[in-house]
Amino acid sequence: MSNALFTPIELGRLHLKNRIVMAPMTRSRAIGNVPNELMVKYYAMRADAGLIITEGVAPSPNGLGYTRIPGIFSEAQVQGWRHVTDAVHEAGGKIFIQLMHTGRICHPLNMPAGAQILSPSAIAAQGEMWTDGSGQQPYPSPIAMSESDIMRAITEYTEAARRAIEAGFDGIELHGANGYLIDQFLNTASNQRGDRWGGAIENRIRFAVEVAQACAAAIGADRVGMRISPYGVFNCMVPDTEMDAMYERLIAELNRVGLVYIHVVDHSSMGAPEVSPELKAKLRAAFNGKYILSGGYDLARANADLEANRGDLVAFGRPFISNPDLVQKLQHESPLTVPDMATFYTPGEKGYTDY
Ligand SMILES: Cc1cc2nc3c(=O)[nH]c(=O)nc-3n(C[C@H](O)[C@H](O)[C@H](O)COP(=O)(O)O)c2cc1C
Image (cartoon, rainbow, N blue to C red; front, side):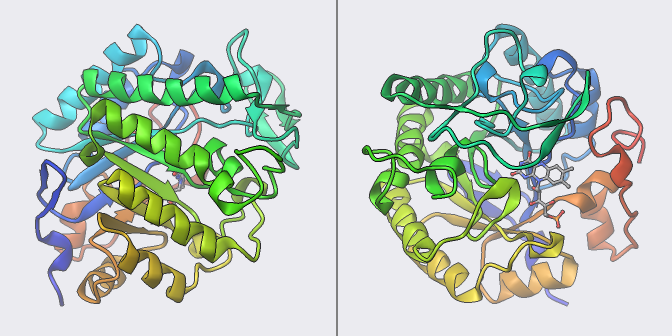
């Protein structure tokens, strides 16, 4: 069998010891939205990955849509993350932080006092989300962002990028996937604006591109990647007929910014529509930086896709939850432990640091 997954690779200024990426996964262990010692242990246990991408982390109190997710806008959060990055580096790993602004995917009961529920248009997502205080609650109606709200959000991402470097991260991943704020701008189901931030493709991609540009200017484009989910339906996103054209245009703009990677989500293994192999190949050919594959990978498929040059790195999500030693297990072709879904988002060490 091919050994491609275990070969080293350069990512911007980083040397990665293998091509195995730990996919970003929200685990809701950050009581009070501050990273803690349990999280230090969790990430350090998984430092054999070539690159860890953290769970989604809010760049602003307005982005703290889920319960117990961490932020990176306060001093206490920066200090907490510093312990995480130190421990991962000491264990020989590299770590990017995923900046996730939840936008309309939130509930006021999960958010600090004074936080605002913002989205490109005042369209609520359909359905409900978990709150610790009152169980399942319907998604609230967001406020359509004003020009100054948009400018402030871009500044918050930029400040978060600076703080990430201060906290010792090797780089940042902008969460442009799965129906969160950046994706809410990209998608016509959540963006029905008539100004320069909505409507035509060049307007809908503007927020993604400006956030990428501002973060790249702050910390260097070689330390900024973006995650995207073409044809994703999570969080009420709806594919439209311009989807291929929009992502091709977005990739062209991200090339201009010089982003270090794109990380393409294909959640067909989780029941989402498949991203066509044609579009994936087009994005792969068009993008100048590294390409991270993700979604339902096992050892054989990961090696096959790397051998076929469909990507440069492969992200593993759920397998990393229940196999902190995933790299060794893949290397020795040992059987993998199946994760317990019931503890994906529960507080405490059970299902988190006890596998
Ligand atoms: C518990 C859990 C939490 C997740 N949280 C995030 C997240 O915060 N950000 C993100 O981009 N994707 C998130 N995902 C999606 C994963 O990154 C990944 O794309 C998905 O699990 C498919 O990969 P897999 O088949 O290897 O698990 C999450 C997935 C799971 C299972």
